[in-house]
Length: 342
Ligand SMILES: [Zn+2]
Image 1 (tube, rainbow, N blue to C red):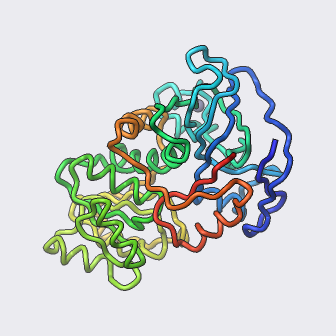
Image 2 (image 1 turned 120 degrees about the horizontal axis):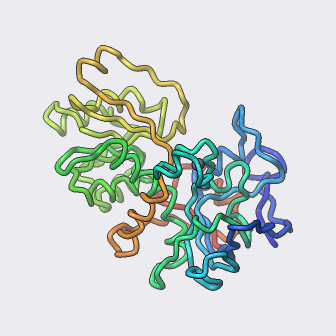
Image 3 (image 1 turned 45 degrees about the vertical axis):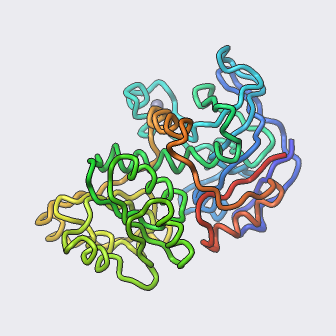
């Protein structure tokens, strides 16, 4: 098959469009012809390399896949069925998996990150339980743009932060995959949303997506703006994934009893915390990683009904994956960047 692989860590130029062996199917696995694969920040981390994480080379990245089933051990999802894939791969047998917390499985892995070859290819294999059939009216690009970020934002807002109707939510970086998903999910659950973005165009798009206020995180102090807009109260929930660059202001933006949920640290992993503020304001700092298979199926019901709609920034053909990575690294995008596989 054709695939985009990297043989060493580095910049976008290490992504090679080349021939690669077809996936070897084991019992219980399905083979899928990839039609679209969305980018995530994880793709960049994997390509650049991270200390302590050894990725077998050559490697095929890509966690968000939509395509057609080629072969499957499940009679109810036969060859030819259009599907999107659960991006989380877990053992299916441990306590966490059997209690429905598969993203806490000791063997949990994200498709395309380390040991499971991903979707930058014509074919990908996954455990059959990772197949999610999609309705005819959802196209492959939309379907590929949905799973990872909507799952992540769903788990952050509803499972970790336990968002209540009427609460105020601050979403950082509205133009990111998690940002656009979090805005939609928070609104759907009756929250008022404040969003940040880094350009006039993105601020406008954040408002168009339903944010009541959009704050320019390059020109304005996020915490000061939130205090001003909420009559000094602060927000109930902060959706954080930026890290060092915004951490202190994100914490300061919290109201008494507020919850900050973080799923990423794209600008760095070190954040200071004022412990006096933590206990006296009864704040909660919550980590979040992906989400469960059940949560993705729940979110997908709203996607299939047209109530959640991933924002697609741009599409690139698979062989142009390096340029797609460059677009993501320049942070110019609003929404998901998706590779199409002809
Ligand atoms: Zn498990």
